[in-house]
Length: 406
Image 1 (cartoon, rainbow, N blue to C red):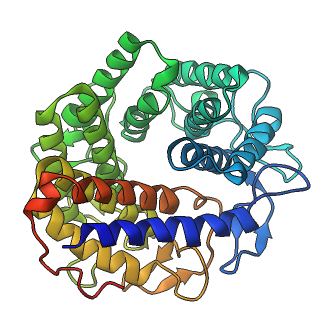
Image 2: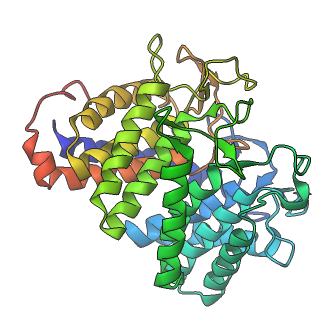
């Protein structure tokens, strides 16, 4: 397998196709911030601004500036979004709204904890890019608020009736694994290690259920047991697979090879569980008892699920040499590049039917922004470079498994 060629392919797609699309079409030069609701050709179809997508885009350009090249246009794009967020994105106490009008007026109250997490990520990377202590202060303040909300993420905006069915959700410990490393430069090392251990325990010991061999989305908050309900039976294979490369990164950071090995094993289990054997691709949702789901989009194939899976498989192979990771990477690489990459316009499609047909031609919207595709391309590029220069990559030889790639 020619890992160098593959690395070049992912790098070229990121730098010459995907990033130029967002730089050209996303920046709102008049009002600040970013447009994320973009048609196939980049035309803006809605001007509302969603805080977690604003934060993700600030993070993206800051991270690339910090890690790839000190390009002026990337830094300017990051600061452009960061200043908009700093001015309009919160209520003055760093409670981050969910969405704003184009001008920056609040539309939806700060009910969503992920507005906070991506604001913290954004300002953490932006502080590194600029050296501005104000950005660092915002990141730390927001992170502290997140920790205060861990037990009740939606706070006063929760729709659940208290005391009847209190469920704990997988998404928050999952994102905290990644966030802690993202803003490590702003945290005391002892606090970082404590936070990491808590997240690892919850993900690998509570939400991973050995009796099922999979990760579930919700457990009973008091007993940490399974819940035979719609929410309790819900499985999101992509969520679990994405979390596994966060765990692999933590395993590297903490020097824990056994944690990496377990994350690789769960990655393979979740792919085998989520893979559509009839049409290919990974299902969006499943029910661990096989019952009908309330999510009508359960059988769709989504961009982020497949991109995050590619990252986890490459990291798993790079760190452990797992041939299962390499074989699954080949299969999902082929599916992803064939179905999600737009062959006529820049950027990638986000939503496919079960059969792999494009459902929506948008390149960005309320949920899809400048994040999973570019981050995934970056992570795959860098991991492939490591494999190409490591004994793991060299030991496989050139199998020709990607000989049809061009």
